[in-house]
Image (cartoon, rainbow, N blue to C red; front, side, top):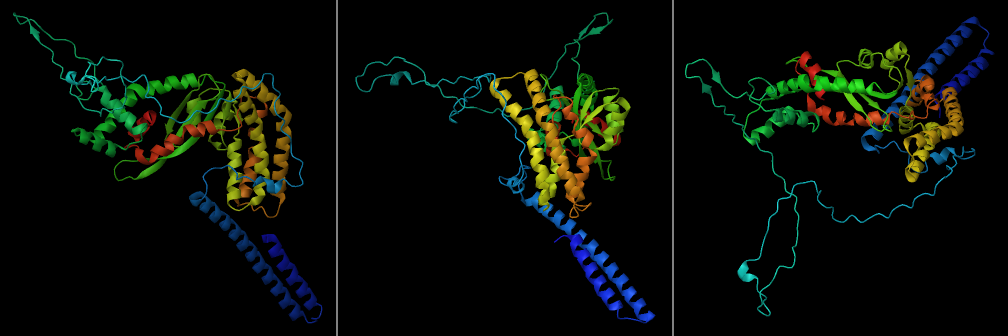
Length: 492
């Protein structure tokens, strides 16, 4: 039973009873008392109305939390869920693409079998021969000749080991004492440093690629037989940033900004401050080109804050199309540079899926139509893979399909959203209410894909790039001072 119907029914009933009672009361005092009672009843009804709204939102949040902790993590809808809203509606057909070439038959799947060890790995040949005195046939006594070789390969791991390069440079002196000569010492990461570049590389890869915290890495080196303190390893990372990460990152940024279309997203990381000063939330911004490009490019950048300064600084005077979610931190650079902002339909869909998980089954209607929107692009992708289309052909066919179907699908999406927005059961503070507001608030950005068939419907490619951050951020324990935190970013 909806909240408004409960509250409205109570108000109507009490008002009728009071009016009926007032018709029999003649004295002014009785009328005044009755009016006060009606006012009091209205106040109680308003409180009941507010309480019922709050209960509905809390129930929704409770259902969402249960789904998040105990339910399926996939955002896919279970089979049959969408059928609840299909009865009595005329579906928008999504016709199959016309074939200009016969589809290739799918090759039969091979059994799992035993996969061969890669050929590029070096082979260490170990020959196990029969002793010479045993190379005699046990039946006839004749000497046996070699007729072949049985080969068995076993993959072996050689554990990492530490080696000290002792560099000895003979010194030569003039008998008259004029000068002394020695061979030039090879350059090191730090002048006079005792660690080779391989140690610096090992520390950087272990921390930021393998997500090992420095205390765990310290224990690994201890098993190797040396003491390598965490502070020393942190100083190594600072040096790697100065020599390698900063110049490489800038070169990658310049190359990335040559693209016309970019993805962007951001994710939080916990940053450790100086001793005794606790932690704060910093942000890693991800930037990438279209995955369909012949040479896809991607990089991440660390920022102390999530504000507009990050995108403004990174993009500079770049212009083009930026695919992002609804976060307003990108608005300043889009307005300054005249950047065309494209929205993410996967993000919009996620809000309605959260509403569904919270118990609002009314979200199924919008979810169904968004699914059809994705189906248009998915069919082009699948057909292109089967027929061997190149990138240009896929974009061309995608544009044709979008021109034919996307307009009417968008009309159905927004018509269903308008119905939900006007429904009294859609509370402004509920997940469904927020989903509807997001959809209408991002409408212009969400429809940009119709203008350029190269633009994908979603920002999922960039979100996937940042998943390694979610894996590593619990282990990084980044930073020990504000200067070091900023330097740490480039390596991560």
